[in-house]
Image (spheres, rainbow, N blue to C red):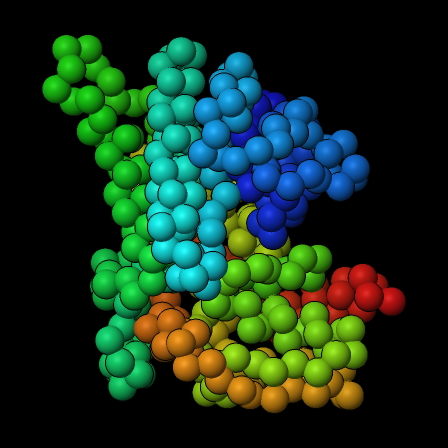
Length: 336
Ligand code: SER
């Protein structure tokens, strides 16, 4: 396999850690960007760690010296955080993405290559007006219900279009050909569950929080109703999905953005599994009306048939395997 130079923004986040571990184990050279210092273990896996904000020109200049094959642009403010500070959400999520699309464009032009730009989009791009509609609609396809109810969802949906624009249309009125320098591809992630990190600022966080609290013998007040249902995925599958989409031949792709699904339990079903694993776990449902509203606007599940057909997407972790083989051993070990 050709060794690639790969830039990861938000490398110190949930997805970033696992992605960095997998990419470096394959021998690729990884340049990482994050606001916060990495652990020594993760820093040792990187060619360079650029500490700073994705809105900062110095950070972008530091990354620009590399001839990058792929960019995984993970840095973002998640849905609850962006809802609490919408303007900052817009700056980080939209202006930050624009900065890195422009960087990818300049890198591609300089190296006369197409830089692959991997983008984690989200189920938050969907917006379903009522719970009754949510139950009625069931699984959503990529082009349905695109009426996001959060700043984060609005930002991510717009970014999907920005990526398409930079890949196919950027500077199309200029005399020389300016397209072909970016190959933008993305997945719409369900809620991701990691055994190693607890997410911050998301609205799907109730599931990972529930299990991490139980493993630490702490009671948990779940901020959504027991019947709340959205899709989830184990982190190893999420990272594999991004990497498999990156590796897919262009001519097999019929779209730039794909749904990917794995399992979609209710919060109650999830709590039963947590309680089976940690019999002393105390889980109460104490819905927060506002965060509940966000969850109710997200689909109960996604139709991922396009990803399955075009690039062979298949989740390796169903809910049971996620608990038995990924979460329980690793989380128990982590808090032992
Ligand atoms: N996990 C994200 C959030 O809750 C959704 O993509 O914001």
